[in-house]
Image 1: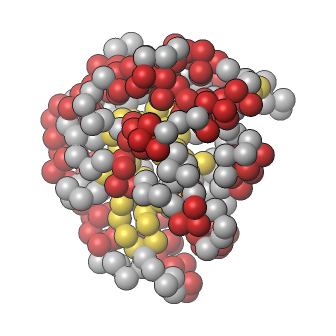
Image 2: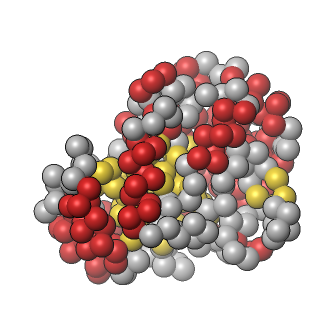
Image 3: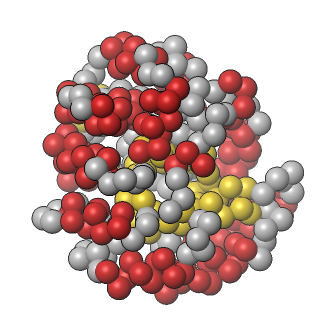
Length: 288
């Protein structure tokens, strides 16, 4: 199984290992839903910017591959775009989508394939995922939260994929509780060499309540500190619940480089519709 550390080398321009390649670009997805030209223009600007070392892969739906390729041909990037392919065409569409990406290796570099799991996280389904996705590409599978969902998380890990946790969305039920996130972290950290990815509503570093929606959002810095405590036997739930940005930042700053790499080996990356917001938060907290 590919390790998160391979995806998160120390970033150029002196990016701390704790934040290297942390933020994957999901500008095409809600709430941003940028057009393909807008999303790619912003992505390449970020990739050549001061904090490029924080930026991970570009997320694109399998159904939009022709559109992505058309725009990249116009842009003529100097290097292939690091891509995470989001499967929205069903498992049966995976081989064709991967074939399309691989046929365009001059403009696309497939790093990751992500997909939702069926409700029962069927073993046969997971085996097919392993068969369809090349060994050098990271597989990310999202089990649905609900009764018995942690068993699904375990099955995903056992089959060599990264489980993904959805941390928010358009409705209140899309936001997992602190206990659910803590339980998820316990399962993943308890499996040797396992990594996870997070997605949705992690725009800001620290836990906060959105004034418009009224929903309380998890913070990606909370997740980082909670992951560190999970590995060291600390109070994970307190880290997830904290709204003390200074205390969370101090704890992050205090991590040794080996500890930071271990944390990122567990919490591999997360998808954000905006790259500027997390970078701004990290800057304000003195972490970049």
